[in-house]
Length: 206
Image (cartoon, rainbow, N blue to C red; front, side, top):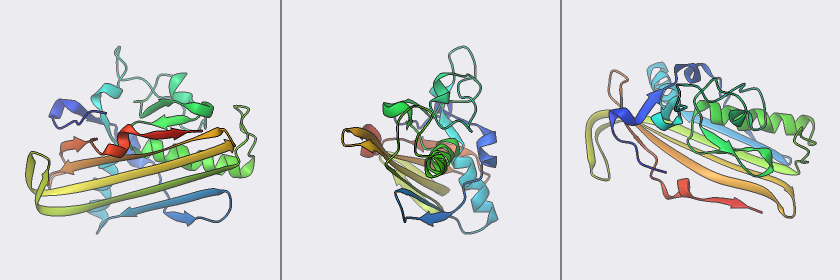
């Protein structure tokens, strides 16, 4: 994945800012969920929501800003409908594989986990034996902040990490960890987005 640090490298999909990501720690049983969002006040919460709504401009369809479909679908809806920006693509076991951490992506795995808890026999034909999603997101103010060759002064930095694992048999499963860093100024303008964490190039399949 590329590192996007120019104004033309990203877009803010504002409907993602309205997605509810309930903080929870449900680590018992085969289908685990952990969501933690850290911010100091309501203003920082708004900035964090904006960071969660930042996509690479390449997420848009070449013919216009239309890719992703019904976010309530637990399977590979991104590949069948064209209405929202794309945050990933269809992977192993007919489950989406995240390329970039966004509110839509986090909500997708949250809803998928709830679906598997209700009925492990998924509509794709796979039977979920276990899953684990962990999302950590935080935002902090920095007087000075540097990332590789870039230096910023008086900025807010959001650090988002999503981890997902899914098992459907001894040789059936998939998992990954994805990270995104977003730098915003005091007015909430996005200054930079970084997708250069080594984990963004890795995943596992069994």
